Amino acid sequence: MSNNTIRGFSFAITALFMYSLFNIYFKFISGLELHPILFISTSMLFAGGAMLIGGGKSTLATEAIRSPFTWLYGVSFLIECVAFLYLIYYVTATDAVLLSRASVIISLVLAYVFLGRNTLGKGIIGVPFIILGLGLVLHYLTADIGPIIFLALLLSISKSLYYISIELNKVGYKTKNYLQDFSVLGYILSCTAFIFVGVMFVIAYISYATGYTLDIAPSLPDFYRWELLLASAFYGVFGVITLRYLEFKSIQLIKFEIFGCILALTPLITMAFENLASSIGIIDSITMIHPSTMLANLLIVSGSVIIIVRRYIAEDLTDDAEIKEARDLVMQATIFFKDDYMNTAAALEIGLNDLHDIIEQNPTYSIRKDVAALIKQNYIKNVAKSDSLTGLANKLQFMTELKGMDTNSKFSLFYLDL
Image 1 (spheres, rainbow, N blue to C red):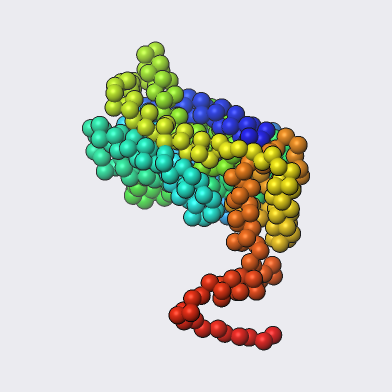
Image 2 (cartoon, rainbow, N blue to C red):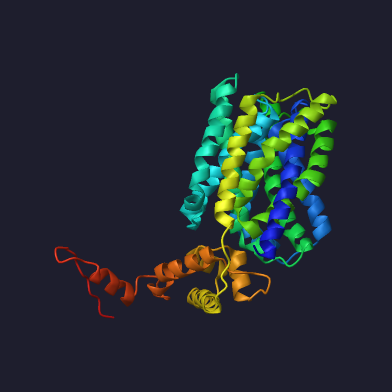
């Protein structure tokens, strides 16, 4: 396991504990009856402003704002938080976190469909455990199940889209230090939050002027509550900034679907924090440690651990000739894609950080056998048999397909002489 991977896991584990703490904070906030969308948007504004002050100006700001993944990042984050706040009106914080673990499966599917990564295939054994755990949670809930399922799915989908937007946002890979990270994140959060707060204020003002109200929109008095300013300032500065930075770095280093698997441990830690907070009177919610809850936790955690182990536990290459072959194939693929590292990594189905370490011959990085096999397999499939100019199949691919035809096959050939 490379140093970057170890760093990624350490960031993810820190985020795990931070998430659990702020899940309890969200339960506390729900008792104040603050408007969820307004609370999250205002928190993002405080966080974005603080990050811009700390990070200063950045030449990457314009590029960040122009990226569609920037807006996907901001919108999906806001929807995720709002869905969680609504969900904990129906269930405990621990149950809400358990239900949100559906994002593990959704992330695996997204990684397979849109990024061509085979994490789903490697970790498929762990998926039934997660599904059983989710089913058990829904089985022992006594509240109206319809809204709970809807909110849980909305939460899980938005969480998965949020993670994938971090990985696909190329601007995040161009930052050189944490100040530039803060600056880029500050612009992303500020722009998204400013639009949401502005739109909600306009809707609230129109509602005030016309007397027509929308249930989902806040009222004008909601904007002036001192509890909103204090609660959102605290979460924005101490929660959003810390968690967004940890997520950003973790996902860059270990990929979003594995980060989601690590966060599957959140329900266990949230349960401990929730019972502690309830026992000292901070919140009035408590999760009883009964067999159903523990079994659901165990199933979901076990499934996620299986996925992580299947993804990362593999032998390293030791043969110098094989190491050189893997590096040569990566270099050739990089040339094929004209130094576009994102496309190269996607074509070879390896992580961007793995690609960087192989190209730069990082002495602390060891090429795993499964990674080398993946490089070779995908080089043949996506590079060796393709034309670098058009991306279409080349003569080698044509001859391979032709020789694969049996004598009874029927096909058409269109010949264009340029």
